[in-house]
Length: 477
Image 1 (cartoon, helix red, strand yellow):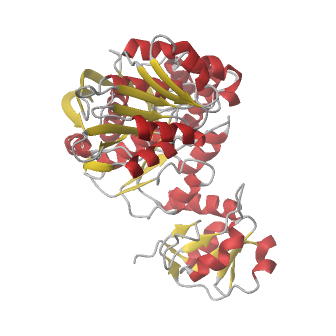
Image 2: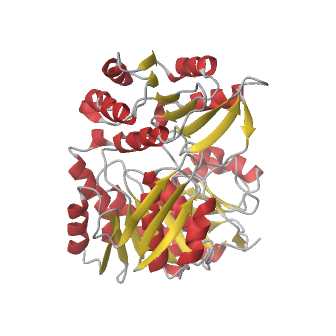
Image 3: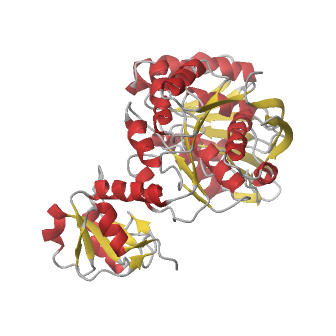
């Protein structure tokens, strides 16, 4: 396998000291002792729940070529014979290595943040850019204080494009991360009430998301959502940070990357997009207007990065959402009993993404006597207004004509009360109870959208349905 870093480069970049006879180099970077590959470097990061130093021997047994450990923990690793690089702090060492990776790379780097759609937009960028060159992108949602430097440190020096997702829960987090990534192009998908419990207002969230604009390279580009009410804040911050090229996307007539026409279908989307003065037809292998809108930012970034726009548009036809982010399953109830459709949106939720999921359910038709069923759980980190935020979901549900609700969670009780009399509502306190209910009450022709914050455990509902019923046909939507 190719060498990602030589040992000399690691020692120099991290300001470390060698301990033992180091290998010539390593083929990869890992922080997970269970999945580390042979020849990779294991970084013994101390997290909130576990300390990687406790698993150093496991990493060594699983093939680690060297270990990166902290000076303070070295005495406790006396029996470990795998060569090591000793640093003051392992996470700080990983951050320094990430910065070194950015310095040595000639790749066009694109960073994505936003209250909704970060991971999906990042994956669309990966798919679109792969048609023009080699792409290095964040794994899953590696968008926090360890995920971003880890993704940087894993970036080979000879890739053509780097795509990074940057997230936050509190003010100041994006500022620290974007200073490492230093994007040539930065995208803000949208601003909404995610993590509202940690902020005084959505406006404050807009300013926090705008921190990504502070790290754009000298001749870089910002791509901002012109359809949202917080666009003026984003534009103002971009101007204040002297971003030389400010672009916008959306349905707005003044958007640089504009949605001219949209046709949504149950399993795909068709749109006409105006990109750089050209109007192109795009098919996306996933449903939802929100995905189509973020595709505008993707195609705009492709154009600005100098990649092939036509190839990128063609590539999006085979784009498929990931687990928990709109992945679709058609499941059999048993021989002769029919099928139902499960749309898994269980990874995360906030008011904006809840509305998008409700809209997706509304345009996904049930068959025969089937029902459109919203399976909803609590949105976490909503703060003191959480009860009313949940109750207010009654309005988009009524507007979408959704008449069947399966709900669980403390605050979803408020939505159950708000919808009583206007919908068929089944409420359970926990995800486990609702999973049992779903398995026993789903019927032929039903369409279920499962949507909740990750911490509520609604993935158990998806898992229960997938365990109880076999696929009727393969689908990646």
